[in-house]
Length: 223
Image (tube, rainbow, N blue to C red; front, side):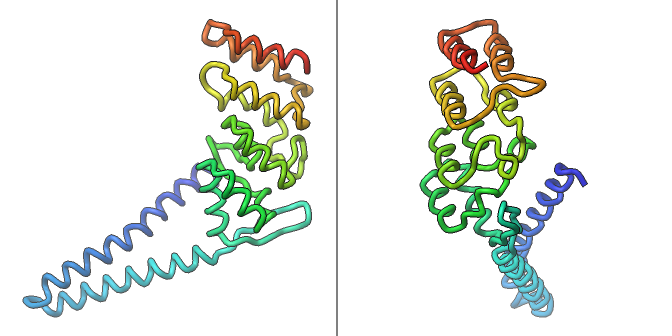
């Protein structure tokens, strides 16, 4: 099954889980309203409410204790799903302090992949595509490296940079690329180079700004 199909099932299942607690409340309220006039029906509604509540509670306990297997350079490591979910939340909210804390506690999470725009990304890539140098530095501090096949899900990650970065060239754009280059990112591969991709990106809007020129100059020196 493709990722989109799996993601769809996850969404549907998530909706069903949320509906359990909603129906538990509806059955409880309805049972209380009918208790004096329709006692038998009220008891049935109370039972249905309890079943939904028990199923919801059982799922939450399972979800909290379910362990995700992460493949690392030292072998497989199992981490609670709840901790992986926290890590994802910290990444998406770009809370570098929290990311640093949880990686200190669970170093294997540096290998954990999240999905963004249909692409698998580890912490370093997420920081790169969102022009967050602090996040990239945090990833490097915890062992992630550019061009490391054991950590980089997509070896051509820089080829996707301008797919994720929209708008005009900014200081953040330039600083992100500069940081990547200074820490070992490759800009030339067998079938593409970053300079050509950047040039195509900057002229796409029909205007080349001074920042665009600065970006191209930075890359031309590495090409």
